[in-house]
Length: 129
Image 1 (cartoon, rainbow, N blue to C red):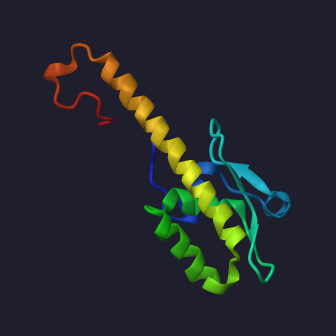
Image 2: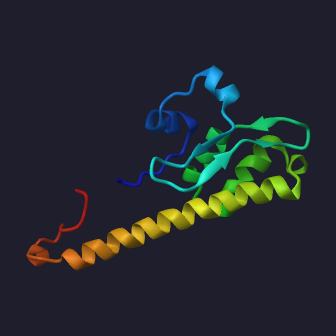
């Protein structure tokens, strides 16, 4: 599976498919991918507004850093709208997803290093070009 940077909800919808309004209302959590162990859950702000798991996952994927991830939600919903537990859960999910991606990337590098073979003369060997 090729890792791609998703930077908007529209791109997220293209990759993971559109979500109907009925499913959106009844959906309380989603997996971060078919083979992922990370589960992203809907969260509520202190004023009762529900942040969908899809939006949270989209930002987990799109954010370069944990700071960028938090900044998106603070800018959109307000810094006073999150209690420690809610933002802590969202941050933990962000970290779990990134650990999973790092482990997957490390596994791919390990597999690529062991394969070796006759590609020593090819400067583009190992690149998805």
